[in-house]
Length: 315
Ligand SMILES: [Zn+2]
Image 1 (cartoon, rainbow, N blue to C red):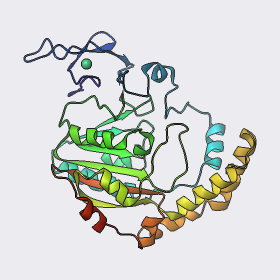
Image 2: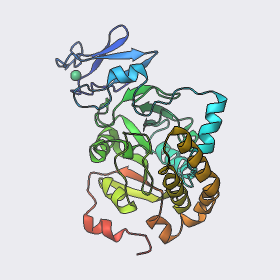
Image 3: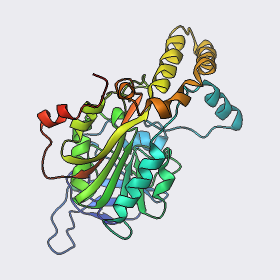
Image 4: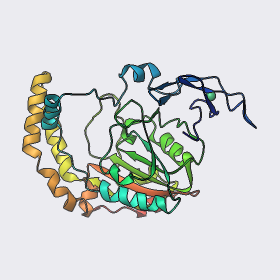
C-alpha cells in the first residue's frame, strides 16, 4: 500500500517481518528519525492505531473485542437478527455511489478511494467496483484491508481522489477532527461522500455519540464545495425505529427485548416504503432518519450566513 504513514507522528513506515515500523523513512532520501512505533500486520491487514490517542486498542482489535466487530453467526442467528432489526431503507446510496464513481473517474483513470468504517460493507458501495478502493475500519471485518482510526488517518497528505464515510461519523468522538483528516488525505478537488444519522436511536452500544440535521451536516463539511446533498433514510424509517425502540424500552431481559423488537419490526416494516417519496419533500428533510453530503475539497470555508441560506426544509 502506497502512502502509509505512522498515525502517531506522520513518519514513513518500513516493513519488518509481521509488522510496520515507524522509522520516519530513515533509510530514504530526506528521511527523518520516526518515533519507533511498531504496528502489527495480521493476515496482510495492518493495524495502524495510535495507542496514545485512540479509544480503540490494538489488543481489542486482535482479540475481536473492538467496536463494530460482529462475530460470524449461523443461519438461525442471522434470521433472528433480521426479524428483530429495526426496519431500514437507504433511498439514495445506489445513485450517489454511481455519481461518486463518475466524478472520481474525472480526476484519474483509476481513482484511489478511501472508505472508512466499511469493514462490514455498505449499501450501494458495489458501484465503486473497478476503482482502486481501500476499505478500512476500527475492527477486522469481511472487507477490512487496513485497521485505522479516522481521528488519525495513517496516510500521507493528498493520497486519495475520494473518501467515503457511510454511517460512520456518529460513531467517532470528534467528527470535525475526522472530517479534517478526510480533507487532508484528499488531493486538491478530491471528493467526499458521507451519510450520517439524524433521527436515529442509539446503535453500536457505547460507540455512538452524535447526530446531525441537514445543515449541521453541511457545516461539518464547510471546507468542501457541495455537489449535492439530501436525505438517505427518510421519515418512515425514523418512525419505525422510534416505535421499535419505544417497545424495547419496556424489556426486562434479553428474551423480552427480542420479542418486543420483533413486535416492533412486525408493526412498522412497511413504513420505510414511503421514504422514496417522503425523502424528496421539504418536510422529509426535517424528519429524516439520515442525511447525505457529496462534496469536493475546497481551500475556502463556507460562511455560516451562506450555510443558513441553504436550508431546504419545510420551515
Ligand atoms: Zn511514528
